[in-house]
Length: 266
Image 1: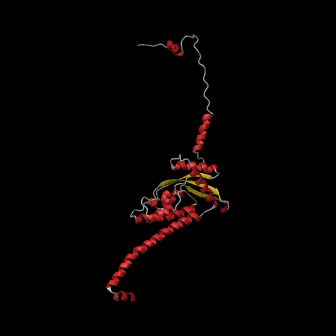
Image 2 (image 1 turned 90 degrees about the vertical axis):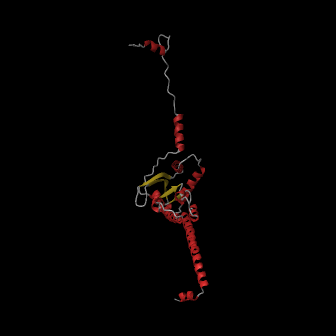
Image 3 (image 1 turned 135 degrees about the vertical axis):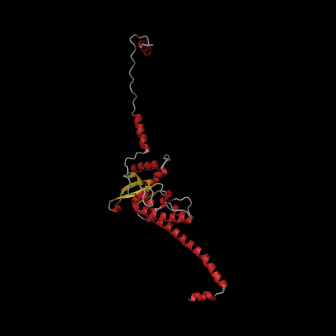
């Protein structure tokens, strides 16, 4: 009541000034809150990547993957061939790695799809000796990139590593944060949020129930080269039998065959 009386006795110029101040301050205040929330999302993602499930086995696998990816010759043209090559190298380092393929049917709000990543099963002393499942994705960041990102969303995706090594728990938290930010980014751009940008679709890529059993018999390029070399090295030319000369000693084999042929004309 007192506030209404205060505005009633104020001069019209002062009231107009206060109204303008409120109109100007509201978008700025809203934008500052939005920017703060976006920066907070970056900090949360970085904190999850740094601390959530950060064990010695994760660091070991990540170091192995980065060493091989830096030293590769770049002959692999596709993600599938590169994954198989990397799995072969990881097995040579004593890791239980395999290529996994996931596929899922269409469900409510989630279209059908398929995906591929690397799975590593490792014995973790910090987990009472129980095997720990680690997910390795060599193209993780690109799964969350959009065509026209806002500056805040671009900063968020830039904080995500290109190669991810982590547990399912870590992956779920990152997916939830990034999908929520992508939804906000698309709406700010006035775009519709497609179903393949939802958290359920993204989780199906790595955590699908219909995940096939990984194949442990992955043959790399070097194995094929060694196999080809062994085949060539062990190849022995067939023995040639000497031709028997005609007893007549005169003509060749072809002339003798022609002489023995009879031509019947009608």
